[in-house]
Length: 359
Image (tube, rainbow, N blue to C red; front, side):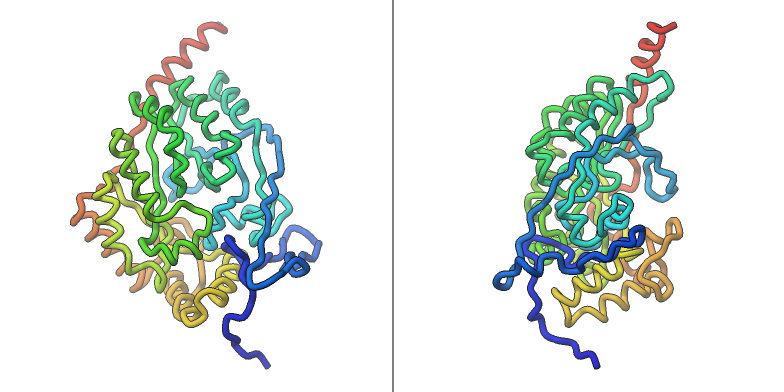
């Protein structure tokens, strides 16, 4: 017989996931709680491991029609930000790790990313398309402060006058404001700052190693002050947790200078269902069933969907209410839907000149 217990389980300090889910691609049985022998007191400290990897290519073709970009570049696999809902967790098993704690404690570092990018931009076959940094994991996660791989990538984009977009939850992006300003002079850059709540207490447990709510608002303001186009990305909206923040959040980002507001709803595909459910049991046991039922209402009784468009927007009454609130917010606070138009002419002209050298 099973009884629901109060929160007496230890929490993993500074982490989102509380467990390691099994890797479906491996026969190895993973220890669900790998820290158990090191547990002292109420909190468990897990150190992050950084694993160097040297891929042969760095830019990925994105075939999903509802993502809004054609190519992405991820200098890191896994993300120390530890957002418990992150869809990218489901990619970590391909590397031999768990989508749970492994995702945020075992980070693969692509140290040769800038060299691979330059090789691509110098090639005769690359025609030039906007490339998104952080299509999967955040390019400004904490280790970037030390390694500066993203900064080196931006220097390559600037060198070749090639358009680039950035999605991040980290104020560390302001370190590279000098390069971003130069890119912006040529309409080569747009930035999306992901922010899905104004509740700092919720942010701490939902996205434990991201920049604070206030720092992200300040980041939007600093980028906008320099004329850099900023989208506020409210992602994901989790009914029962952060869906009451929509209008006040829109007001805040508009006042900070964001030009555009976009949103997606949470989806718990793959291992995320177990990871998120376990997290609710630890952090919000009283809300667990309510939140899960509301998420299920978005996807016809399931916790997620793999269908294009539906997986981002959901359907049904609660989904409609969420979308209506965003429509109202955009009208109230003059936030647009138009996508940024990158300047491709400079790269293509430069590329043409390069090709003439080999004619």
